[in-house]
Length: 366
Image 1 (tube, rainbow, N blue to C red):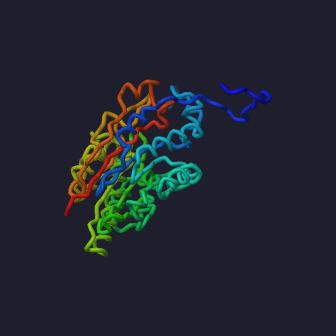
Image 2: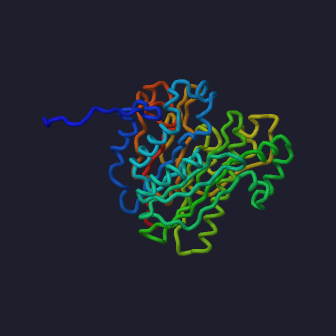
Image 3: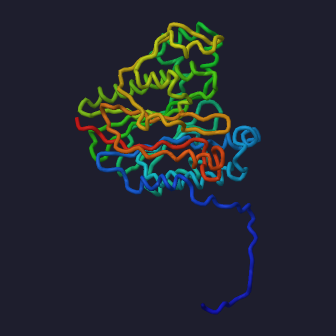
């Protein structure tokens, strides 16, 4: 050993120094994503990252996430894990929800841009300081268009929904509830760098959260799918030589037994379906929803994608067109033992109360 020289000295940190998490379960998921998605394929991630806006309150710390130490709920701690987790998945299309605007600009953009990912942010309506974000790998995908749509405004102003809005207005309570919602749909239209004849319309949303609002979520989902279909038709008409496909993902706040999932995968919800009448004071009649897209959930329906002390269930989905894509790989979810090691989420090793969905999709040969 070499000779030690110099005076002893010490430095006192001016900020709180907290313990590191050790190995996180997402690092074991990284074992499946060491390699980039194969040629003619791309890796999709959908992840609700838990906005500071909702986590950094006394109510959240006491009632929503009581099992998580306060330092681990803090965004300064969580964002380090979030960036490490997201980058380790080597995603090509990353769709995030509950993104604080300042976290997007100060943290996510610098970290992901250095890895070749470009990103766009879409704030929720009103004064809410969080929203959705889409990042894409520039070596694989090229942006053609991006837009932010506030669903409540679209319902009232787009002629596409004139009939639905007329029915909604027959119940003033329902009309008021829909009008007050800040829910948005972020739409990004991307072109394959490898084959510019392939165009992907990407929709990202985070539907209304309230437990007794199945009817609101169903209507919001119906608005989203019609807007996305309209965008697809626009591009198919404008560029008839291009193959236009849809990816629609996010936090739908709805488990598979409810009508949002059925609308997506079965293409139709009738006017007398039970979700319309779940809340009698906001019940409207005469609304049916439909589309003609062949959609499935790329990651199926895991037992849960959200796990807290008060609730667990599958709320998040990556819906894809089965006639346009093949699922090549689904990254396994963490084990139940990993999720519950610290009782519930978030925890010192899980930076959100949601678990990201990750799937590799391959373009079908047409």
